[in-house]
Image (cartoon, rainbow, N blue to C red; front, side, top):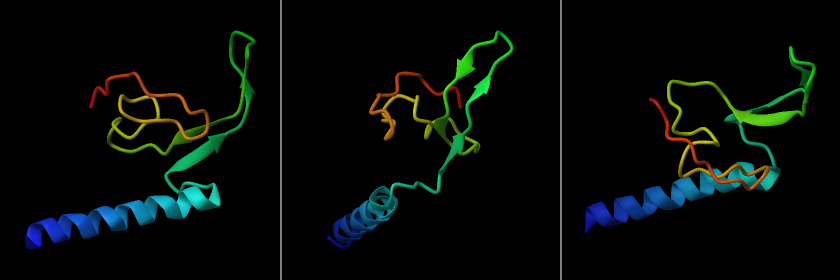
Length: 80
């Protein structure tokens, strides 16, 4: 029973932490990249991406994740 209460409390805490940045429109785990022209002469629009870290599982394109800016669902299987 104690374990169940702990899990429920932890879930509420995680949800509140997520709602904190969703309400302000900024996520401390992301950054915005400016638009640029690549080497082939194609203009790439500015975009929001997750900050670099040691895993790909939290990237917007990874399976199970949704990009909050575009609403697109991730389809790539993380390599690590």
